[in-house]
Length: 319
Ligand SMILES: Cc1ncc(C[n+]2csc(CCOP(=O)(O)OP(=O)(O)O)c2C)c(N)n1
Image (cartoon, rainbow, N blue to C red):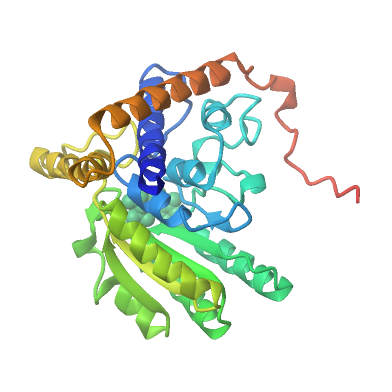
């Protein structure tokens, strides 16, 4: 049943992020990771409508987008842990996971970086007439950048098959959205550029699936759209950032109380779409998948030091 699949995918993302946090604390993940927990309904609900050939372009908080688009948990975890069997042979890490084979064009360390890349991808698809669409995920922090307006303008002018998805989690590092943005937010800005837009509760998987389905229909007919998903970031900006200096305990607790995974599970049981036993079986199966992903990642070697300059320069195509 469709919503059970969606529940499974959301839970996979949640468990994946919990494992990344554990491994980070244990010193097995180099650098920082920006966790996607609490936002699972957005990537899953939007990617539900995409084919393997469609494209997504992601952000610094991108693990959920990769998994929702069909990337393998083992190769993702290997990448995040800097191992040879990761998607980018461990050279990219958490913020640069890409898997072109499933249409995942890359996570991105540049805030707003997904916007011009997705515009280029959508333009290429339109020129090729291949029927593919592109989704640009971005955070509310990208909305204050000039590139947001530039890409909305081009997408509208050229009728690009492009869906903008704002993950409005209320924070840009330590600054809340109300202290950064004037005007009516992403929906009003999109409409000002002639792009149809709507707002949705990003913690409600059913609402995201329904709104994204409508938007994707329009995008496939060459009408770009924008979905503004209201959510709230769990915890710190990245896995090692304490929040006490700028967030109250109640604020963090309210974010976790709005958990999209628990909310969908409860709804499925209340509506008779699933039993508690079915959800528990899914949980056990997901836990096994995450254990297997960790075994795969940990058994993969770290790249050898003498290969540090490999893949830095483009060596041309052989075809
Ligand atoms: C162009 C650019 N400016 C600033 C930064 C530093 N930076 C990294 S993440 C971040 C906050 C982004 O907030 P948002 O887009 O809302 O995403 P969130 O972290 O909330 O998911 C900032 C300012 C950056 N990486 N790139």
